[in-house]
Length: 320
Image (cartoon, rainbow, N blue to C red; front, side, top):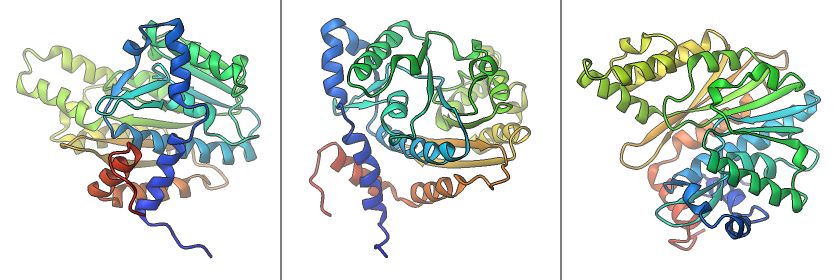
């Protein structure tokens, strides 16, 4: 039996998945800027810890497609905040593929998503995303008819109609804050999907705090939170843990199987990744992988994350 990998090795493996993508994002982007010289202005600028989030998403995309292909016919993927498909690490300059492109490149041969739906509100980011798909199609990584790109507000999409031909789907929401309305999320949770969402804990706390400091002038913050929660239960919160738990209780009213993973970054920044499933007769086989992932993330100390990221970005040489 092989030796169990320690946290450092395990995270190095996860990040190497991002580093060894073919074609490299730099190669694809060089092609795009020849057609759109200003394309760099439409990439999301992200901090170095974005690599951890992307490694988590890539891990689950792999797990989901392996298991779902055993039990379902046509499997689909929805990225409701698709962005431009490439992110730029602002303190390093490195380019990484975003979650929609990972959904194309990560799944193994014969385990691929049959259909992918990418939703993005910003028109310019949509244009960049389309060109990435064109390039990947030329490289034989995906067929154009597999991908549907929608330049829309994710709250205006009829997901029931969108996924009517899919036997099962993975839906990923990666908002900047409170963009998804509860009416949208609750409708999604009623469909035959696995639901994964980044709950931007620190950002939601700031919006809530801005309202609490000045309720008379905070009607805009209040409206955003009410749309996000679907009601005013957020007003019962005393801290950010309450804000998360209130949201989870709403999800639990629709979905019976939920896991959360807390990801802690620098300077008090943190968020929670929410996984929500329907209970299955097979006992939700992917839960084992999620719980293993949860243990790996929540038990990994901050300095370990710093070390693997320093190696990943080339700031230090690996010591293992």
